[in-house]
Length: 260
Image (cartoon, rainbow, N blue to C red; front, side, top):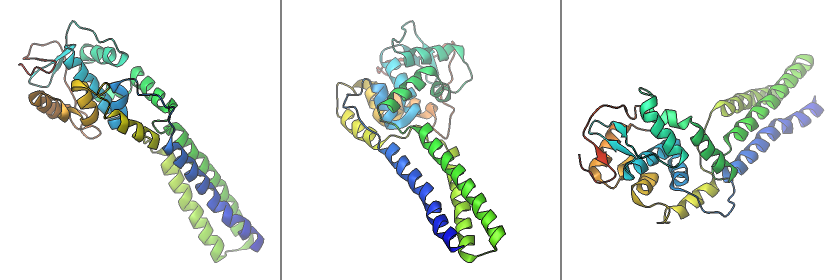
């Protein structure tokens, strides 16, 4: 029994230690030294998919590719955005009435491509790898728990072994929880450093889109437009009722002029 405990004790501590170190490495990330290519990338690092959607909305208003009514409705204009995210959002304004804008955009191919690019550059946590790490750890603890239980049944109860079994069970539960929880969108340490540099780059975060990328709808330069966007845009992650959209007539705001 003593020999088993000498082997079993470090076996309980090793998996969680290795998993924690791997996750810590994933959260540190890396930086390839390149500059962020667009204000959308800045928005993603600053506030996730919801902030990217807000930034695209601000950019389209600024370039008169969309107009905003007093009721918070967004309407298309004849001008078509050139970037994939803008084209995707413009398509949603007329094609998917009743859907939630942030949710719809967060699941779209353009947003996934943006996130894949940031992940490849080490600026956001590779969430799939993080969850896989904890799932593998859970499997290891399930095996250790089974082996310890068999040993306990064969050799009889021992206080130390029972404590180790309880610890293994607790770590199994924690690993399962961490393996199922999705923390998608978390910026790595390297990503936060890149974001801090980008926030001071006026060539990258200028105009209404740049202001919203850093501070959300509340930072839109035109206070009246900012109030409408903030009021009807909802709160990311809690209130997903973002915008209504359609083809009706309404008072409108084009760009940042604030004229209704």
